[in-house]
Length: 390
Image (cartoon, rainbow, N blue to C red):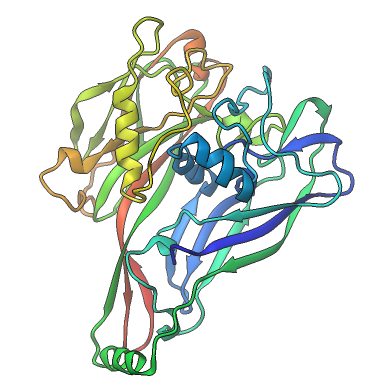
């Protein structure tokens, strides 16, 4: 399933403002996808990712510049020069807008490799032996969110999508293998397949918030590998001049950690500093790489340099940082932390900056927490049901 890909087309509708309209600089046309669900033939939920485009953004932040300006531009229509193509994230202070232009007449073709546990499992998925048909359910983003207007252009975006195709590789085993596999299923032995998934939850940070904060989330996952939090301005979600998906903010955070099951992880906060002459962002960057690395080992670089990763003027510009912690690095186990029985929430503890270093001084902030966790897909050989346990 890791070789599967999704194809679709994005086009402007009659009556749309002249724009010009551009795709997201990091994830291209994938920004039209708001949520992603994979459902089994018997109705069991196998995977669900809310704010899917934000998850894809986090994943693509760990690709090299050359990967995004070649593979990304050809498949997802992201920016041709991703290192300098910073996302627009201030409705009142547009500096520049980057991406691929959606033609006024015609359409833009998008090809996307899913960021989803079902499509990244460790083994082959025996879907031919399951009851019913597994299907993919996608919810599209609100009209103003995916595309961005060039500053000074004609507002009023209208778009739609068409031509959706999911391409899935098929392995056809020989008759002998198929017969032996059916015999194994008929014996009642379940088939277990491992993968790594994501759970999303959100919290709001009020406008004007500075200094020490605690933001409370929750999860009941059995094997949590890492935690990742990113921040975006709430008003960019309804702005035609902002990249709502990739317009990340650093809020001038100088230190952070998480409270997991009543215990601070790590015990000493992770520090960051963007001040001139004392830049210190390496620890934040390394934790981000470790956190997303549980899903994909193909993390050969990043789309940031030392000034872009955490911007000094957070109110005007977008950063490319994710505030993450790898729980397996701070636990005695190697298979994730069991939070299924915890009565205590997950808490992000952070110290926010002041003034222009913190975008929360201008607008309310949406915090997305991503819980990276193990998933076990189980095929019941007797009745052919496929379920997910996490």
